[in-house]
Length: 453
Ligand SMILES: NC(=O)c1ccc[n+]([C@@H]2O[C@H](COP(=O)([O-])OP(=O)(O)OC[C@H]3O[C@@H](n4cnc5c(N)ncnc54)[C@H](OP(=O)(O)O)[C@@H]3O)[C@@H](O)[C@H]2O)c1
Image 1 (cartoon, rainbow, N blue to C red):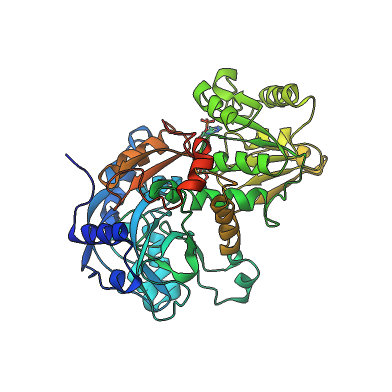
Image 2 (image 1 turned 45 degrees about the horizontal axis):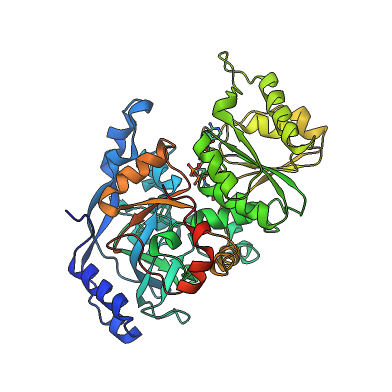
């Protein structure tokens, strides 16, 4: 039995894509009053919160159902989503931690008012990545038209405050699309602002392309952009979770930028993927059995030292110029400790806990710094996408589930049972479709498919 979406809308969009339909023909496809999507329910929050931590699974709260199609604001586009991907933020949303994302939707409505009020619903269509075809454009969108094949950059900003105009991430009303806003990427349709669109890399399939924007732009800002750690040629960069979503792109940026990655992973299979991608130095943290926190709830300085020695053993005595951080509480003390004098810890997340502890003597006496980084502005997202379009970086997709099984995709990521990125097919009836530039694909096909399982 096929689990692909088979609504009238999906059939018409697929026909139009197949035929390479003209913009006016795509614009003529009727938009239904409701569409199929992956939605959370506000009234599930209490039920999920009452579960013991070990029993929480994202799939318990992810409903695949019809939701009403919102009216389009003048600065927005309506996209027929061919594929999306599973990001960790959907895991957070679906286990209602650290706070139910419905609070973000209420705030969106309150702060922005007007069109913003559409976001405050008893359902939340989640998903912060999307690749598809523009179906409709609002009256203020001039750069894009129906039929354009696009990716969505997941930064949603108001830009009504001067602060956001140097760097949109500084906007006081900055939001992660599909996490802090509704009508995200896990659906047949999604709604984004015109300024979020980027051209689809046409040597990639729908699901490969969809697996990139969020983690790609985040890793780019953390390492490459002047807003992050500003990696230089020759830098040693310790990458936690080097075969995960963020880490898989960090590894590519370090190699492209002339740095020396030290990859940390938790299995021989993951270590092998890093080596295949070009890493020479890999630490299997599971095999090494690092325990940075003791039974007494305190950090173990000996274990931090052991990590530092393992790194020096690989690098010929060098300490990391940059540590690429996101696990958070479990590793942060060790990250600060192993960074070289004057080096940087760049962090964008706290998967294992956001109350970090570190010995500040190692920070101040060795003049290290901690750089906070979040998502990326449109220019950074665009630059990261251009590198991919040129075949300089590649997706790290391992597998793709149909939308009906989006819950399983989220469970895999929650359990750290995945590799690279996990895709979700929305309107795409099967994996492997959507490539227009076969010649460029052929040049890079090994790198593009390296993470497949
Ligand atoms: N602020 C932002 O803009 C932003 C953007 C993207 C993601 N994030 C956040 O960043 C985090 C990672 O995202 P992701 O997409 O890379 O997730 P991911 O695909 O799950 O990768 C995370 C990796 O972290 C490693 N890891 C997990 N637990 C660990 C531990 N206790 N100690 C050391 N390493 C551990 C795992 O690798 P091994 O088991 O192989 O070591 C895993 O592959 C999430 O919390 C996500 O919400 C933030």
